[in-house]
Image (cartoon, rainbow, N blue to C red; front, side, top):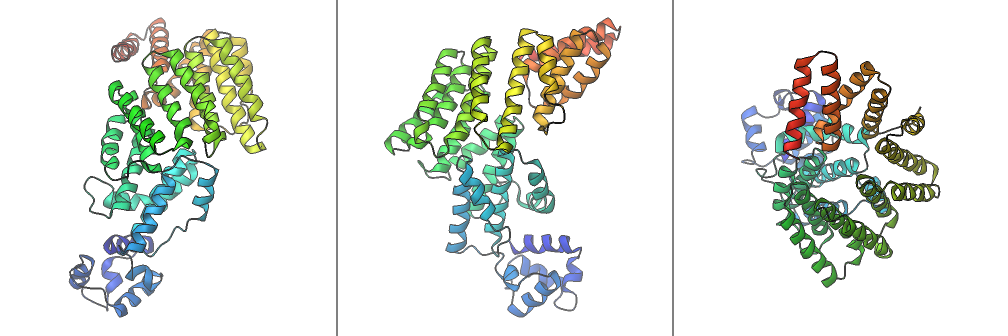
Length: 426
């Protein structure tokens, strides 16, 4: 671990190894120190630390793997492997970025990156990677190959799982989940989180028997260990399984069970948002638009009780829901009215793509084919990247028809081929 820290600090200070040790030791001797063949003596560490402008302990203890360091790294992993809550934010804010032990420091950075991705803080996520993580991920970013202490390996696996989930690469996510499950203790918060991730991956990959088995195993452990605070999240995951199986009423019932068990949750407000989101999506997708509208109105009432910054974010989410209902109804006047509500709003990248899609369909309804093409082509790559099949079906079909009507037959053929591929693999 000393080698990785020295290389990082050299890059940060724009020094070569030769420049770092010039006049101190030979490059060959220093290479042997970094390879842990020779010890790093105190006087040399002091001189190197001075040139790198860091404390001596930051160099001497970079490779520390003592019990205290591993316990601290484990604590950080366990705390940030829990479900995100208001307490998580306080914990993250209190964490110190730099630590003499690289195991602790890198575990902190990896788990912070996961947290920033979970709360959609893109700026913090990008800065952490640009200023620190990208370098180390290039060096030891393969958890299946990296020879690192257990806490750091768990953090690497957890980070990779979250990354693959965000890209909808669930085969890769599931592969890392299987490795991580063997490293976490059954019944711990981390284990429960990984079990939920496994259910999600299995549902996405249509491995329904494995998804159900994971749910049953987790539910058994929750009741045996009296971990009732995890029941709401577990029922939310189960509702996703039911919905994927076409058991729509069972899916909605599972969401009701999740809501009924919110009394046990550590942060009921966060899970309630997920419950309402999933219920609205399910009701909209199954054509129960009146019930969806009622749920949206209920969501808006809850949002009004939140502080201004949170309320504004939640209201933008409900506005997206209203756009979806209007689009499903083909009520273009209503859709145009809802879209106007996003003027000058601080929206996320996901919301921006959703708005482009709705605007493309609105333009098509007004027979403005030029604007439709521009808007549709702007959002297609995004929906392809997340494999949003319903959106892709609609976009490919419309792009094919519009291209054909404009006598762009080659383009039309390509979009029809893409549509057929999506339908076959649905």
